[in-house]
Structures are given as structure tokens and as C-alpha cells.
Length: 111
Length: 116
View 1: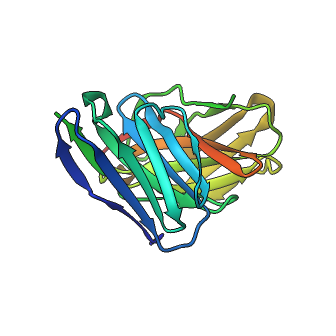
View 2: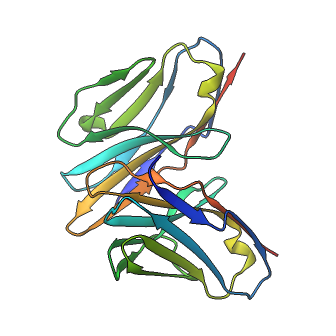
View 3: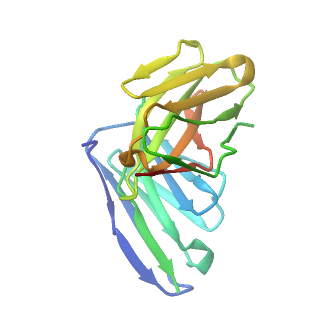
């Protein structure tokens, strides 16, 4: 058990509403990542963090923002959700040389 | 730019057959790691193996084996004597170390269906 939890695990929301997904770790890893998984696209990196208050964009960052005010929490925010953001979101944590450990995923449906 | 290509979208085999999942990667960097992850129908992502760019030795773990060839930029995964429990989506991934920032880039995955 890698000590990583995501919340909420399931969420249904309406277009235009803000949504925040939380990733919490108890492993004190430096790196934290947010991915989205969609059929035919595999896992695509949204944003990642390499330290408290240090974040960078991934390949599909438009429409998303992140924050990391402490080591254990990495928040992903959709300021105004759209139907194209319906997806399964995975958080991952890890050291800079080792394998990443993934959360169980958060299924978001935007109606 | 870095890229991982898994050309096989879906593979279907009968139990006990051997199967190889292909992975081709692109990077200009000399220091990188390659990974394989398994995603069973339950949805979680399970780490299988990590290989660094300086170690081209093949690795075997039970029925699983990995063949890393820098000359062809490939990191293929073979399952010997496949079993129904091997049915899953398998992802190949690449991480390049860029100073403080490291990005793990995934391929699109290969869905393996093992029929009884």
C-alpha cells in the first residue's frame, strides 16, 4: 500500500461548475502527478509537482490548475468544468528515481 | 520531445500461449527510465518493472520477461504461458530526468485479452 488516497472517488457535476480533486499522500514523496485516462489516449499528464509550491504543466493542462501548499496534498481544480473533462483522473506519487505509485482514480462525469 | 508508442491496441490470445507486447520510445536524452504498468479490469495501476537507460540486460520475473534494446529504442514485454489473470491493459512509460522536473510519459496502452 503506497499511502496515496484520492477524493472524491466519484463525482457527477454540471457544465460550468468548479470541481476540485484532492490527492493525499503519507509517503513524503517529492513528486506528485495528475493524469487523466481516456479510451484511446492512455494516460495523459495534466500537471505535476516537484515540491511545495513547485508545479509545471503536462501535455493536457488547458482548463486545469493545481496547487500544492504542503508536501502531502496536491489539488487539481477545474475552474469551469466542461463535458470534455469527463474522465478518470489518477494521482501518482514517487521519488525522482523510483517507480510511481498510483491512487485508485477519481471518476468525473460532467453533464 | 519524448514519446512512447504502443502500436498494438488489442491482443487476444488463448491461455498458455506466449505473447509479446511492443513498446517503442523516443528521447534525445541519455539518462532515462522505462517502465511497464498493468491495469487490470478493477482499474488500479500496478507497477511491474523499471529499467534504466544504462542497463540493457534482459530481465525475467516468473512468467514475465522484458527485452530492452537501445539500438531499436524498444522495451518489449513478454508473457510466457499466459493465464486469464493476465488479462489487462498494459502501459509502457518513459521518464526523463530534466533537473528538478521529471515527467512520466505513457503510451496509449495495449489491451490483452487471454481467453480460457
